[in-house]
Length: 355
Image 1 (cartoon, rainbow, N blue to C red):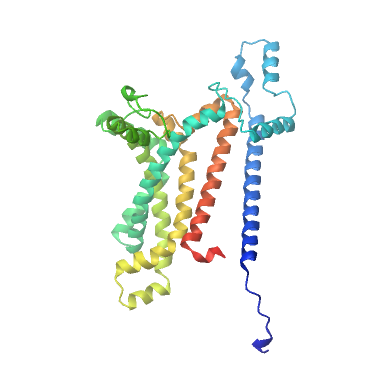
Image 2 (cartoon, rainbow, N blue to C red):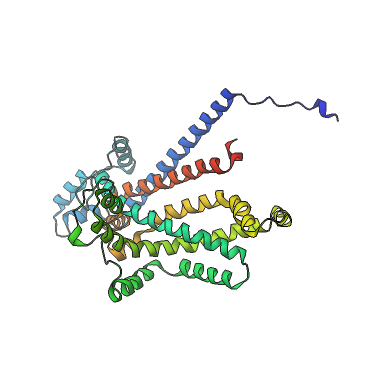
């Protein structure tokens, strides 16, 4: 068959590309909204079938039946489940997440208060995890089977398999109780609490912007230990994945070709192999960051850190579904945002994904 008879598809026009991108963006938006709606519905149903009674948490075990029923009606718990969920979505469309039983304040205000503390903690931890974990993973891959590789793999195994609350307890015992190098529970020394006006909710940033360096040092002293422990957990995960990605690249033929051409080992590793794992690393770091935001519950409990994890734990124990639903919505939005961000960065580092 002659190649001249094969029809050649027309080149895409600029308007066609724009329409395709808009259609793709619409599909992504619909997927995101359906995902969040499904997440909320599942959480709502689980919250209603849990053996926790929010009415009892309010009125107490000694309240009479009429008081109990009155509070139950005020909370809307006497209505069918579908009606309750419909009312929740209606209020949510107006930005109303309900009132928290735990604090008596709107859930939206509570989340705005506690979320920056967790963001500050998780951001410092993921910086430690990335800046230490990536070089360790590359180092281990380039020394496969040698002593350096075994040491890195041992650190990774230890950091990934040891319970994080044990790290927290040991860290407090050694660095706070024995050595006095780190702060104890909370975000800052009580003597400095409230001295800096909250602008971003990030205590390190606010104190630096205000030029209050004693407050900054105190905040850094208190965050160093919990962030370091969370960072160690991230180091274990990121170094292990980086080693795996690098080993896959270092076995490719183009690496052998680069070495035959006489390129230095540093150029082969960092300019060629490492550049090809950047897209995979972005996904790993984004997932690790989302996991830190969501999974800081234990470390916040151990260190008395007034963040999102401690708020969610207290709400769950109380059966405060407004607070739980709001927290779950935030977690869902964070993961969706991180996925969208990693997709956008894909297109920056890998031009093939733009089409």
